[in-house]
Length: 295
Image (cartoon, one colour):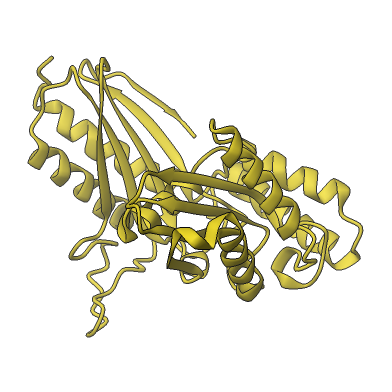
């Protein structure tokens, strides 16, 4: 199915809206997890922090306000339906323009700078930014875009190590727990802890980041990995780090693991955390102009 020229303008507008809306409306599964944690919390300071979180969520939703000032690094995962025939370069340009428009038209704080000069274009874009990852889906006739604004507090708490097979599952557990405990309050807990296992060094970290975008509490389809998710989740919540690192029963809202096959002499592992807001937004776009938004 060939897409019309208007399709790219629609993608641009949708990407603008995904960026803006993601900063104002927290996903329902995340809100539910925050409310559950607040209801079971026993530490007074943690109860107060959760009440502030819930108030911020409600202000964002009801008053059209940003929940946090950090507009993050814009990241898009784009699933292209195999039945669509489109111009990849035009699609890429449309996503970049949508990011720029979100920053100029809202306006959002531009958090993106060059790595050495620290130059800021005030567009939330630059060389290599936004981050756009493409995938192709068989027997699909829509474009599925998942967006997250990755804040620096949680992004700075990213860790990766090339384990060897002899380290085994215990090596993975040790690595994850050491770095979650070491991160402490810095990623604005309670966090979603994304873990990548396998692949190459770059793929492993990408898996960890993608893992943070899964709905809270969803399980990996592999029973062994799902059991590891549960074990790590329980262990992290026994640390007592709590919301904002001030102590409490909930340090992680979820632990999600994604994996890939790897080399016979490797077993890489990566951790990527998402702060308590776990902002994300997605949209499906069809060639006839239909758009379906969600989380």
